[in-house]
Length: 336
Ligand code: AHM
Ligand code: MG
Image 1: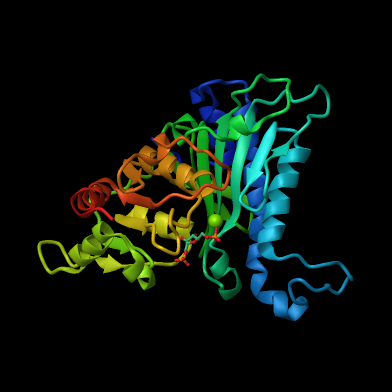
Image 2: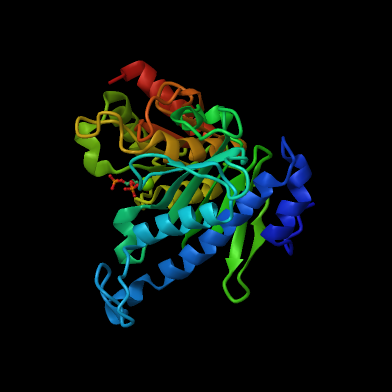
């Protein structure tokens, strides 16, 4: 029975034994992400004050340079993970290349690499709409004690050890999986602790929400156009409701709680879709599957795609299982 008084710290310790390789390293890593997320949360919550205390990109009253929030989030996560000596390599949506990390005592003894989108939903940052952080954790495939290589990062999503997101919304939540279901923790800002508020999160099998940027409609594959029309038809439990925030984390979070499907298809402007396989789609796909949902590129399982480059993009369909099945059915029937 889930204990709603439990803090994230307590939960991590209690569940450590369930981890596949239990040395405590993964627990410490998730703890570091939790810490960095608190720091970023503090900054995100002050975003509206920027015009009062000094414009982003300018200098604040102390004469320090003010960073854009996405740059700040990127630096915070990277520095926290490097300083706590907890990973052997990092890749970020904000960085061109992956980062090799040397641990202080012996070289490269850590086993895990982290891939991160430090602040997703960039178009929402300046307008007080929810944004999020997404992370994905793998065991390295190259030998411990050597510098990480690109191979350690180009692993299919089905090799993920853990994944999660932080949503900076009306409240701040950290939601993650280590392959044993999905649990959500809400930050109590007065105390600075996350509490287990959403144990064992599950997508309803069916949903009534579709989330897609319909401004791109004319550009979509025929299968997606037909699916959107299907959502709008009056029949059975349809028409569905359209809800699109434009922040993947928030759209996913709502759909997981209420039941729905998120789509970012390809189009002539985005021939492979917009979202990145490694930083956005894989971690969300792992969470979706762990929560009884599904994630696909329209034809195949996202987590079975073999990545070929760090910033690779893929079409993304994710959410309630029966809804994703339906989208695949439309893609099979009508194709591009
Ligand atoms: P970003 O990584 O530049 O923030 O882009 C990712 C975001 C997702 O969070 C969101 O679902 C999507 O881009 C929205 O894109 P669009 O504005 O094209 O609908
Ligand atoms: Mg992003």
